[in-house]
Image (cartoon, rainbow, N blue to C red; front, side, top):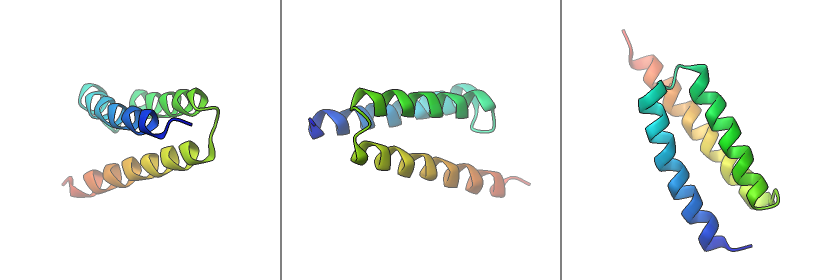
Length: 75
């Protein structure tokens, strides 16, 4: 596996996450559907490599934590 290419893809994906969050908002189902679909696409691109799957799961958990924190900050 080309680790450099994978982590460059992860960096690009994080940028896309930020764009999608601004476009749809993290509370919208469209945002989370995009997250799920794009994680699946990236995993398939790297033949469901175990590292890729673990990395994407960690990133989704990070997004969930950010969303919960954001939700908790609202009045």
